[in-house]
Image 1 (cartoon, rainbow, N blue to C red):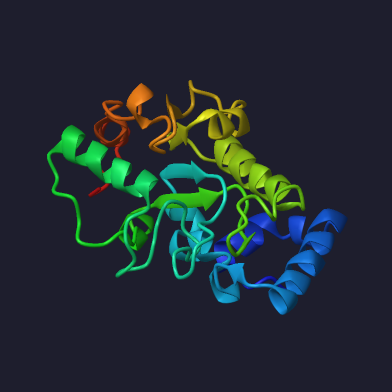
Image 2 (tube, rainbow, N blue to C red):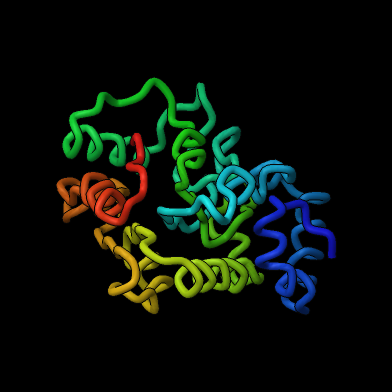
Length: 220
């Protein structure tokens, strides 16, 4: 199957694209795009991979679903296009960066600048029906993104994994914390951010770990 994805990832994941679950997933997603409003745009489904090639990955931030409101999702977890108001979780991320590193809250929420520095902004499920959170869960995306995380964890070294909330922590439970930096905190959602996300200092910890392992720090 010819999947439109950045070439280094295509090489790493080529056997997945031929498996029955992925073919079933592809059929389902195509039907959804033909019959429903689905986010992100079809050409942006694999944006996280296109923006951050395999060799450049040094941080993984794991989300769950794409945003399901109009114009928000563009294929990067927690990120929204320029001109779109910050969703509450993203605002809390920026608040924590401000508290942790003293950086001003930016003018827009497009995190492409992080991706270009080696941050894989990976959602567990890569598509969603408009206004229906979780509508594409259980269709095969989770199996695919599990493989992505497993490949990174087993084939790379000294990667920072930011696992926010119980869902992300369960998905990344197998990651070897002796080989990688695994940072855990409650989800940045307003429902849980005050239980430990705000004040977690993950961004300074990530940069210190990267620096200590000979990698460039991220300009958050």
